[in-house]
Image (tube, rainbow, N blue to C red; front, side):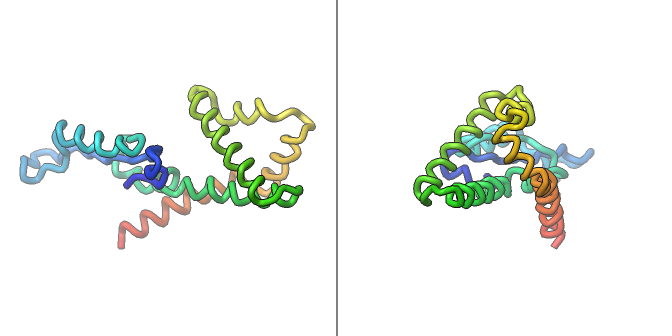
Length: 163
């Protein structure tokens, strides 16, 4: 299933293709033909990117990419609340938050060979305003909370698939 950014052609879909068991014959075939896989890929590429993963990583994919947009929206909610706390009206704050997240996402994509930590370091001056802000986020364990959120989503996906 594509994630919600598929609505604007920026989705991400995982295709799980497992090799057929030995001696499985056509009737027991678990693997699509090359033509079927290509057609499926084209279908999902019409709404964004496609990655091929083993089925064992599907719940993990859901934790990162399926639920991931909600993490970004939660970040946006917090940034908007912060913008309002420092004096911006809601409309202006939302404009600033949207542009900031879109710009950062664009930079993250454009600098595909650069680690996210390096991109963050490029914005952060020792003793500066960004360092003051990221120190607060680290004190509140934001990176750890995101990691644990992804693990929790993966675990919930596993539980749901087992009935």
